[in-house]
Image 1 (cartoon, rainbow, N blue to C red):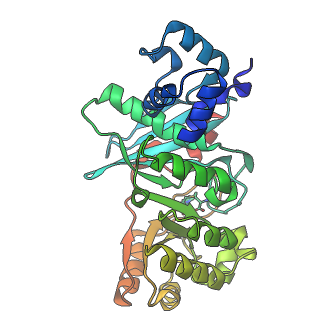
Image 2 (cartoon, protein in one colour):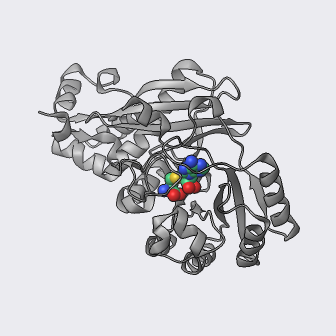
Length: 349
Ligand code: SAH
């Protein structure tokens, strides 16, 4: 049997796991035993409370996690870790663990590559190879938790998740939603939805759908521009959806979930970082329950776009603050380890 024909246990909800166990002729209590191992990211061979015969049977039909850490780069500046993961079909994806005083945050990928075509992003340079399954998105968390247990058994493991790695989560909608349910499940990692952010380039119809799912994650929207004309220079998705429509969908999201929306804004020299741009942005966001995350553009060598000077960043932020917009400068973490989306994978492909 090919690996691809086997059941990926990390993708199964508890109910699906119960059905799987029944299918292979085992008692219902096995589902509970298996789920305990799955959330630890254990291999079948490590499931010591199962008989050898049962482990052999499982090996024939299933594998736990199709995501394996192949390389780790550790920042000397702040302990940020960058991972290169290998999937069962040999594809590579990447992720980042950031360490904060309240716990670790893992940035997860949702697709191999991306088809959104944003001008500043390295993940999209070769398009989208394929969607990740819900189990492969979860598998990144399982693999990193396993690593943490091995190197630092006293640490708690991943506490927050940001869906900001490669890929557009709302372009892989069903698996992204299933991942949220899996990672939040009481039999699973039981991570609160409040500790999870989903970042989108603004696929408006899917934003409405997400608002109606009853999954109150933090919605981050990659805005990057104060008006459609500038946004279209940076993001092809801006040709399909206007900022007005995006903001309308955000208001709906806020109303449905009670959560504020985060706007990501990457400052790009000569494109979107003048004080006029800041003024226009604050006018559009006025009165909205939101927060702006300003990021100096992380330069990608295949693209000609340039980052701002520190003065430009300061001025842009000060201008938004003057106009009472809640704003922070996103800390640049792991600057010494190819922190920008997609750069590590490309260098190893
Ligand atoms: N597709 C989703 C999530 C992946 S990108 C989205 O568009 O939001 C995660 C975030 O990183 C987005 O805000 C994206 O715009 C930003 N990003 C990508 N490349 C970047 C770069 N070179 N510098 C700064 N931010 C970048």
